[in-house]
Structures are given as C-alpha cells and as structure tokens.
Amino acid sequence: MNADPAVQLRLLDVQAVDQRLDQLAHRRKTLPEAAELETLAAEHSRLRDAEVVAGTTVADLEREQKRADAEVEQVRARKDRDQRRLDAGQVSSAKELESLQSEIASLNRRQGVLEDAEIEIMERLEVAQNEAAALAAERESVGKTAQEVQAARDAAWAQIDQDATAARAERQALVADIPADLLALYEKIRADRGGIGAAALRQRRCEGCMIQLDAAELSRIRGLAPDVVVRHEECRRILVRTHESGL
Image (cartoon, rainbow, N blue to C red; front, side):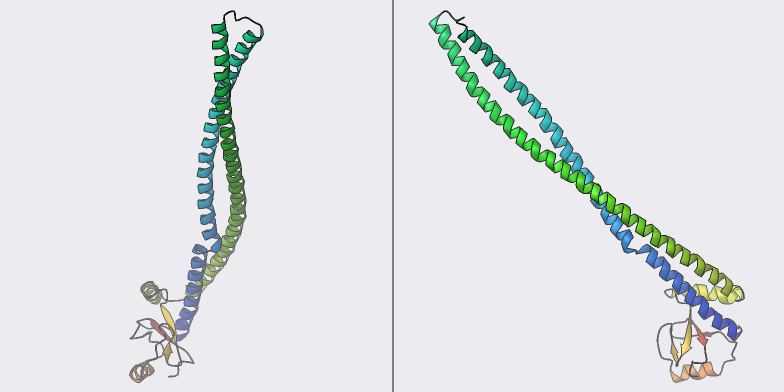
C-alpha cells in the first residue's frame, strides 16, 4: 500500500485524537463521582430497607402498648369497682368481704405486673422510635450527599462530552484526505492492537510497542520509497517515518 508521506504523518495526528477520545471515554466510565454515587445509592437503599424494618417494629410495639394500656385499664377499672363496693359497705357477709378483699389484692398484684410490662414496652418503643428517627435522618443525609455528587458527576460528564465532541470534529477534518484503504487498515489494526493502529518510527524505535528495530529491518525500511506504507514486523502496526526516525 502506498500513501503520500504527508498523509502518513496525518495518520499520527488521527492516532493522537483517537487516543484522546479513548481517554475521555475511559474517564467518563471511571469517574470517581459515578462510583461514589453507586455506593451512596446502595447505602440509601440499605437505610430505606432498615427504616422500613424499624417502622414495622415501632408499629408492632405501638399496638402492643395499646393492648397493654387496655389490660391495665381493665384491671384498674375492675379494682376500682370492687373498692367502691367495699368502701360503700355493700358487702354483707364476712365470706363475701374476704373474697372481695382477696380479689382486690389479686388485682393489685395483676396491675403491678401489667404496669411493669407496660413500662418495658414503652422503653422498647422509645428505643425503636429513636432508631427509626436516626435511620430516617441518616437516609436523608445520604440522599442530600447523593444529589450533590450527582450534580458533580453530571457536570463532569457534560465537560467530557463537550471535549469528545470537539475531538470528533477534529478527527473528521483530519481523516477527510486520508485514502479509504489506508484508513480502513489503520482502524483494523487499532481494533486489534489495543487502540494503537499507527505509530511513529523515532530514534529507530517503534513508539507503538516501544521496541528498537534491528539493523536488518532498518535497512529494509531505508530502502523503501517514501510513499510506501511501512508495517512494523514485530507488532504489525503502521510505522510512520519522521525526520527523527534515525534511518
């Protein structure tokens, strides 16, 4: 394949732009803000799930407290009723009096047990409510941080996209005069060789694979016409001769 030496040199400019585009794409994909946002999203989801569990615990304890309150109130009401009968002298027989006094004593003990249980439930409820409130506050804080990080990520993406658009326009201008067959060869090699399809021969070294050319290969290249498209025998990339090639 043959191409004007100036066109071959322009291929190096295309390569430089392509590398810049690759770097921009890599940067867009690996932005620290994007990774941080994923971490924050996972944490926000975890906190939301934990908050749901805490809320369920609070609701269960609130129902449990209502039942305990009702039981205490029921025992208290029954005890008060018995006490009023006793105080009013409505009990006529000694046996009935003894039975009523025994029931009041039993109700007092039952009320004490129920009130202790009620207090324990209230304490557990307070702990659960505090935990739910703390989770809600933490989730809100994480959400706020995520919004800030997302704004930073979007701004970085916008700048990268702007730079990439400018680079693609520059590339379009550079490839306009490059023969289709040379450009196709470059693209194929670039796809096969880690993004580098053309490299300069500088100081007798291929800048694509950084290997020093041996005397035999240098002699072969030296004997070729300036418009011959050279391929490095080691890495098979297009090797562009420059005034610094050392031939």
